[in-house]
Image 1 (cartoon, helix red, strand yellow):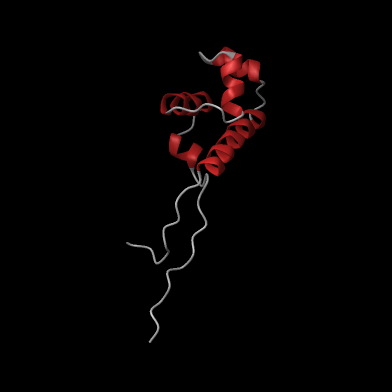
Image 2: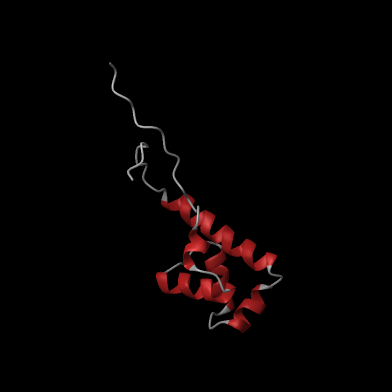
Length: 93
């Protein structure tokens, strides 16, 4: 079904910022330190800090992060950076 809302493009900076905040929040909620994450994965500590600060994120990294937290990639991304949309203008009669 096609929505009645006008498409609004994603904002890269907002998406990146929201994603790195979600990753950091997940780590903290699960009681992990950055060092714990490094021990559980093949990331270097400096690389993990770059992930949490939003300086690096490839598709491969995104998949590794989801695996570390044992969640689906779609769950990691759900609602991240959703652009604000406005209803499509209705034609005047």
